[in-house]
Image (cartoon, helix red, strand yellow):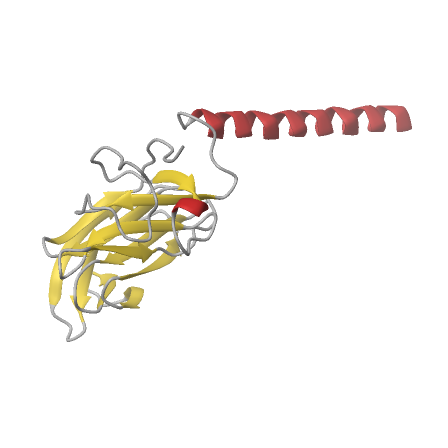
Length: 196
């Protein structure tokens, strides 16, 4: 009997080890080359200019995808964190640090405020707060369960700036972007690794 239990435990251990290795291979296959150990994730939303914090020879092709790169290419960046480049009020690119991502079983809802005024995110028609007040050129976020809802972006004085409809799935990360063009939903996707 003890031999059977030991054999079962060994088989389970081998299976779990193999599953972990397979998952790492699957993750690596998502990118055109291996991720840097100190990877950060950077995207451009409405701006294709190079922010002064970024040290790269070339920019990626136009898209809203996050591009992994080594933290050494982005001054002040922390490995594992996400950043967005948006146009500032003076036309110069602004770098906005985004909230940390959490459990994959939840949806990470990000409010990215690329406007000159503070905003917050609420359930449309109900005023129930989803993401607290987010300053100009900053971001806020919240982990939520999968849900379908209409979300409204409100200014500090309670004026509605825009509404987006969402149908959120487990493991999905989405951004509600507020900028000079209004309010829109941007699904988080990933592009090629940047850098050398």
